Amino acid sequence: MVYENHPPAFWRFLRWLLFIFAHRKFRCYYPSIRKALPRMHPRPIFMIHGERDSYIPIDQAEFLHQIAPEPRSLWIVPGAKHNQGCIVSTQEYAEKTVGFFDHYLAESSRPRKTGSANGPRAHKGAWTCRSSCPELSPSSPRKAPVGN
Image (cartoon, rainbow, N blue to C red; front, side, top):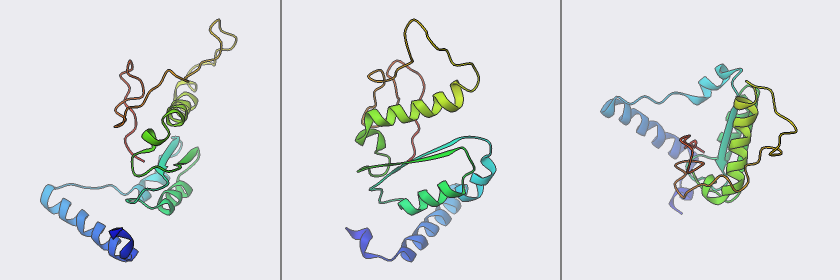
């Protein structure tokens, strides 16, 4: 592939040039994730990254995961390219994202119900993911995260 024939310094320069162009032409600013992550405490962070992502290297995702404050989680989706985690691992994507939200958002504000008539809360089979990942549930207005 073409991207494999250039050294990493070339791609860093090209990325920098793109940011400068976007800033000048469109007045578009890109925040530094590296600078913002340490200030995210105590917010939970869940990063999803494709194993075969050709846009953002895995080592960059691992670096961002290391500098992120706890609680943090990184899932590298086997076989997935950029933004394809939902397509490659549909069921696991749904389970992990819903599990993350249940653990850190829904369950943190209310006591967990046990021994209900319907049994434990289950998501298997209830959540779907379309090829473009517009939503986790066709009946739910909640939107799925877009980034990997």
